[in-house]
Length: 413
Image (cartoon, rainbow, N blue to C red):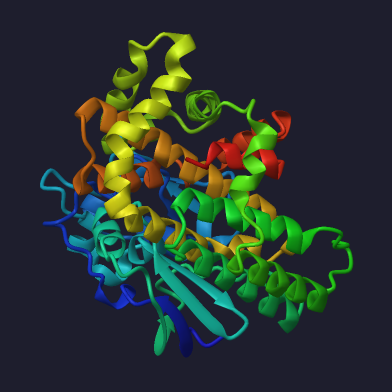
């Protein structure tokens, strides 16, 4: 592959406006998560003759025992403050200072950019765990729009994910599903929770009775178009399914799923500092409520403190979900994984709403700063934790919450 090649690129329109801005950054990307290093960068650091770099590398780098290839060959060992050891006392990068910007690892050059190669088209967006990216992408009340441009991709500088694709029909069906999901998320004639639920309704109808060993692409595409038409005509409504699962308790299950993060996920030392600040307020908001009143209290405070804000600013959560579907859509290029991606979407949305209710209750209001703080910090804490998300998927299956009629009760208002 030509290491510098011009591609047709699909991207949100906000993408070209992004620049790393230390003055606006509210949480460093150099702390409190696992930072991987590609093999060529690792070897460059190990062989460096610079005394400062040599001293840091002695304890600051190690081989990644869970590596799957050259891209995640090594790992940076964070110091006792959970900060990258290459940062000096002035929070400046010693690699940048002593070896130059070109010597930064792929991780440092890429983040918060997420880049996927689909056949001969590049798709790229930004991860919302970056506070600058979150503010840029989420506060647009006109919604996230997309564009095609031509640009050169430097493969030696950034991580590019290439999902396994069997044929062009696979690309066509996934793009149709993703486009439909994004269209539904941006349909503002109904509430956001119902939009998320309607997506599940579409997927259950479109994918039922499909033989996963021999996918009939035309049949799936036709079903998607038929179900979408029924939804647009108002003949299929997610809320009509709610009564079948009235025994599912929203607060209980979302609280349990959040609590699992402490037992099943990464250590709390990897939690975003800003998320810990949010979480302390959420826990305080619910701490004095008796167990038998939690469900009722949760719904009452949602109506009192959060719903009025979301009535005006639901587009912020909408933009987040649209961006999530686009940035992580590489997970659905295996059609068998589409439902799993939807389950994750519902969990992330549910956890956001759960935390927002707690924050709004504690502060007796919700505002843009709190909303952005939660989205950014939860994105950094929850989304990268694959072990935790696997445990959550098992919990959903165990509680039969992976079944549509139970699942939507967790997300509908």
